[in-house]
Length: 101
Image 1 (tube, rainbow, N blue to C red):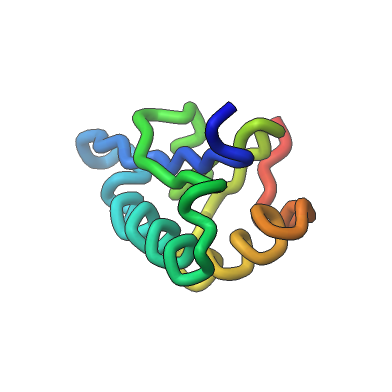
Image 2: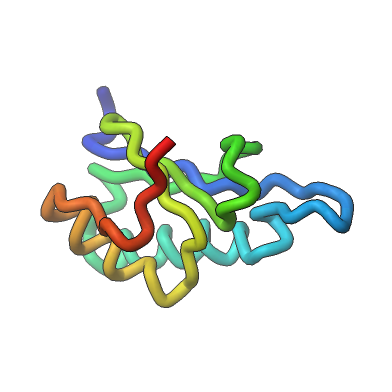
């Protein structure tokens, strides 16, 4: 596998009144993750990219981290550094944001 970890951030757009990650700053999260990974020099080992629907709209903005398949919900821009440091670098999921399906 090319990347040690892969972060898929939902950017799906749905028509109102349905909640969707795209309208809840999904694209801004993609950019924030990319920026944080680049600043830390991690972009060669960890990839962050946009994704379509993750079937977690009610909990959005949502993302999933692979290879472990950990889902996060209600992720805010202020949470990006914590997710990168705790989960992506130190393999400790951020429990307060973790979704258990």
